[in-house]
Image (tube, rainbow, N blue to C red; front, side):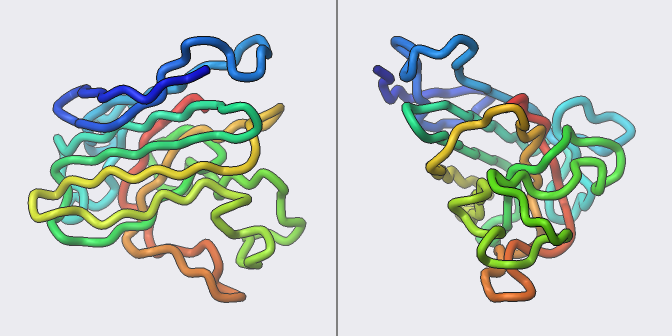
Length: 187
């Protein structure tokens, strides 16, 4: 059984899921939490800004990932980004690094045999973790999603923030423009 509780970390307010018992009884089930401030690649440890006009150094990020019985819940909270702006965001394969490409491609539950994946049969919010958001007039946003699967042998390593909303049409599905920020998360 899991319960929802208000969570404030680093000035970010969100609702998090707190485990009161393992939902599926499997060993190693638990909540992954990353709380960090964005920094330029030369100074970053957990959260990287690759475009300081869209994510200023010092902006805050929190990611919470929770395994449920047969699904996974992911929550993204940001503070200090450009006000009233829409960003794309997705779970990616690898941890963040100095270069935007270091995080790899989107983590897909069922991997598209053709890469880069732009087929909506694979690049979609049920097969990937999509966390697109629009900031409020103070540059804050909280968004969450639940996907109908859990991580197994392959796990995502980060959440990448993109410059644009995620496209869904064939040939462009999953694309969201340049990578402007990244938060390492141990899904």
